[in-house]
Amino acid sequence: AAALLSALGFSALLTARYVTWHSFVFDLGSYDQKIWLAAPRPNLLDVLDQTFRGGVRVSPCGTVRYWGICHFQPLYVTYALLYRLWAAPLLLLISQALLMASGVVPCYLLARDHLGPPAAGTLAAVLYLLQPAVQFNALLDFRPDHVAIPFFLWAYWLALRGHDRASVAVALVPALAKESLLLSFAGFGLYLAIRRRRLALGLATLGVAALA
Image 1 (spheres, one colour):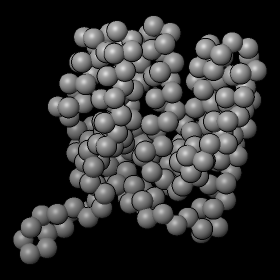
Image 2 (spheres, rainbow, N blue to C red):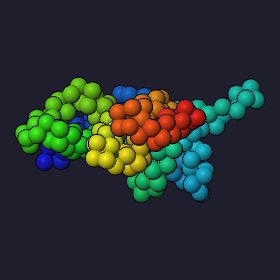
Image 3 (cartoon, helix red, strand yellow):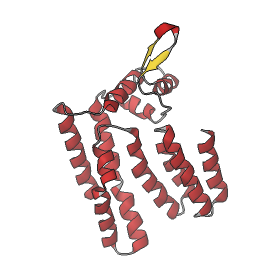
Image 4 (cartoon, rainbow, N blue to C red):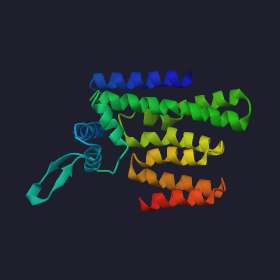
């Protein structure tokens, strides 16, 4: 219930700000352009290439450059495919709100499993929603960094339940959203190697992060 209510609340606030012309973060426009340009590409490789290139190709003084946000972000292939159905910045905003609200669930499960009574899980879920970093990432117009919070919570919960390989797959998702989040993915590998005693898997995760 808390996840659903927070998702509705975050979505309503972001939508109201957008439709009343109060969106103010430059990145929303840049990512909308980046994904809008990638969406009509004829095949997935071209879509992936455009998510890396970022914006419009220009050639000032004979030098080829790309205007816009240029990060290696394979995750945005998913957004590009969704833009074929609904090409609107609201899709980015609402998806951000839903992802951030979904973090309530693993937060509740982690607290319930390790602190005991269900009330502990409820309290953890409420504290998650009151956390300034959660609200900031949910309500800032659009930034790729927001995916780190819910996905890493799910990854830690899966690891603690003994699903180590699945936890690595989930922890990889934020790393596909922005290069800087590869550091967090590397840290998760160290956690698996040291805390979970999964040395081979943890070092493999760390190695993938280092090579990327």
